[in-house]
Length: 203
Image 1 (cartoon, rainbow, N blue to C red):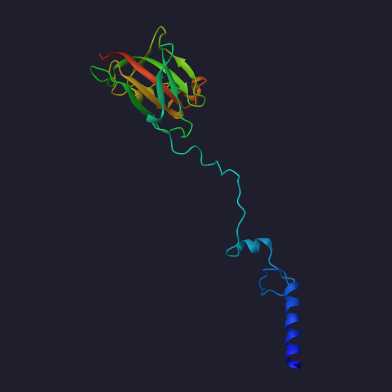
Image 2: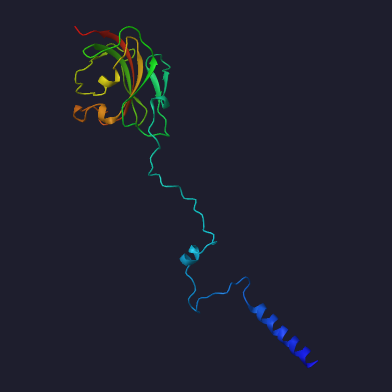
């Protein structure tokens, strides 16, 4: 009976100690007063980290450069000129791009030929039409192969065009209006819709 009483007493003491201990506390190998810091706890395997709803870094820009096919071209409501829609989910292209909107006929333009061109110029930055010759008196004359002092991109953009060719042209900032031309569009990436009205062969 004495042994039974001792066993009951030991069990009661053990139960009391268990009741005083914090729940789910794991034994620690650290000496007293050397508890892990929050950053050390975060590094422990199995420790759940708080998530952040902050937006990701936007320094990656707008993704891949746009292609000529990404740009939408429609006839303007007035029937003179074209409306250009520039997508917002891709970046400005760094090289000149072209896309045929309407095939022409006859001989393809070659160096030395003079092309009379109707055109509409849209600024990439705001999508607004800045210049438009459609429905206006007069056309732009471009002689292929000659240096274009104000608009370098015309030579490359109009290569191989035929009479009646309508072409979408994306002109990077370094091939558009020259910085020393005093044109307000200097240094701007441009979207051009050009239509070849006439081709005068080299004499």
